[in-house]
Length: 231
Image 1 (cartoon, rainbow, N blue to C red):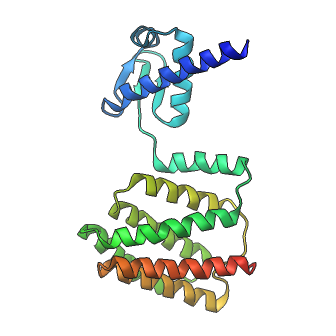
Image 2: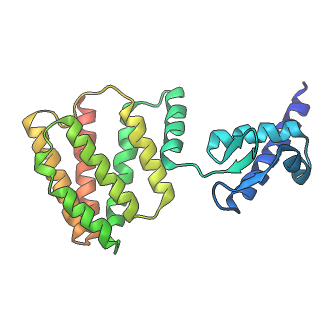
Image 3: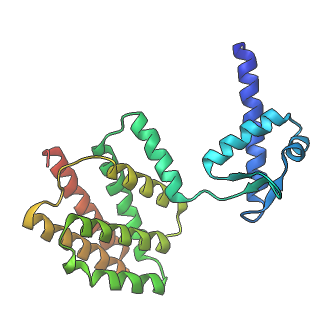
């Protein structure tokens, strides 16, 4: 196939992808979009083009193909966790390393923490209050990791900023893929971890975005200093 024909083919498929995605998001999740022949007619393309577009949307998490009686193409919605795994895979393919993931996480955290301090969501604040009460019981790296993930999950609910959530989840997932030395090793590290979380969460619960950002930035500086020093 010539370059011109291949480019034209890709353009046709990309156009079908965009139109199908618009059809999907215009309807409730799990709604049937149509059958293969129906969609080919609606989009004005051949069935092979629809099939290629459908594979792209399946990979993105927007489409599910069901076969058999009642089968057809059904619209779905991609989850942030699935998208973050896909992006993390892309970064691994391009040799993005562990310090880069930490750099992204801590930079995003500075804005995430400040934004959370502005939220009026009382339910999320109660959950954060309950979580901080368990801080002193988190003695192992696994327990501290679970605490951090629970904290982030609450903050994502408090801050309705989907792009920030996606980027943060992606960076956290990418960070988890790397074997690494302990950022909070030993007794001193454990105490520093507790001190940092207590300072950030207290600022959020006090509704003080500037202090929350300051605490997050202070944590970021310490982490990056340790990374620069080779842990």
